[in-house]
Length: 293
Length: 316
Image 1 (cartoon, rainbow over the protein chains, first blue to last red):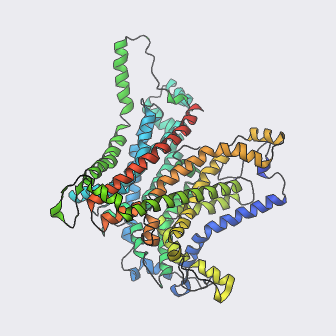
Image 2 (tube, rainbow over the protein chains, first blue to last red):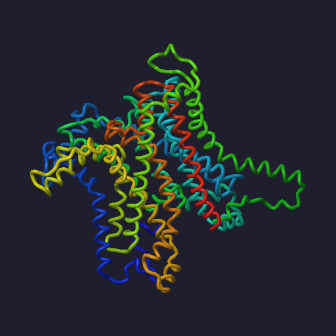
């Protein structure tokens, strides 16, 4: 991935990489900056408003230079909003981390069976995984609700963990397959000639090579689990409520709660932002299911 | 890339056919074993519920009237397909998906072209561009609803006041253009995704061929039209495909920004409502099955696209 870095030195740079500063080039660079700023403004606005007092947040025109305060955060974590956000945040963390762990446990062997020593008709299997991702979640919601009700799993974090695992498993299998497929056959053959058995080859040769891929897969599964709203909204109530469901409490919030809403949005988004920036260079490959290198 | 596609077989030339077959069977199972846990898990958790949905869709089952439960044939389907609300939500879903995917794809392409050039601070601009995609969808929708669109203290009307002063127009964005309000917020979230995929495509384009074309006197536009764009085609297709998968199923933005009101209820939201508020399990299931059928039709085309991408990888 060269995307995070400046373009590598190209021996014969095309005009696209601006060989010498000219007017058009400068204009395009300024334009790129403007577009970037335009796209980040809502996020910056959310951040700035979250540090304003409720009174300063709700003015027209907006007060850019109002004094900064932690009032919004205090309200979010305090009693102002009615309930503590800590249990939902912890539930989200539990559901995301455990389902990600389960996804890895199931997807890595599956990806191995689809890449390094592939089963027959492995493409069909791979496409079956992808097709489950295309089926709309909402059509499976009711039976899941009824089954969970029947076995007493409603409002139980384990139900979400299982659902999030199934939601991310196809993506993870596709991603891990593409990362494993990058391991050159020659390396595997060399290891086997050197007398490595399968376990040893996997541990000493394959694992270190795909570790960045495993990390990226984990982070993307974590992000999707953390973001999920529909299942969590229908299947949890008070005990297993997740952070996005907690946020929906602000949907109808009116008047002087803008700073609190923004503070809540910042806090809930923070883990995803961190995970996303950490996975940045493998993000594209992950999001495109490994179809793009 | 294509070499590991071939199943590797050991030296088996000196064995009898029978022995070979037995070995192959054992080998097949050894290969299959790591795959099975994931496959079985996925079938149980995702396919089984759909079978149950199918069964319930033929039942008269409303949680408010538990005594009237029973099979009714195609009754639910007739009600779903003749219901004005459901039909409206089908149209809304199509409008929402097509507009968000198209606009974010075009914007993503333009921005990717801008970011493909080397310039000062490119990494910073790229990071700024990615950030919208990383804000939790509910949080993003909340911020758009309360901090940007709000007619009294939202940023948009605040900017209008800055520019035009006291008498600036102060539109109520969400109630005057509800669907557009949702589309804009989703375009903001999904343009970065399209941009990332297209940028990856741009950076994998064959530089030597383009250099040769330039030396041959091709203009920048000709190079873009006849070389870059065809090269990008599969990346555009992939972006559209993956974007569609997620945006067709969008629930967060519709739920948060308008709560499905003002003609913005899409299919996921409508089904959620039939199930969650009306408790009409039979009708919710029938609507779910209709969505699945629609999705299968679209997915058939979509899978063909991915499949072509995939063959290219295999041939590399």
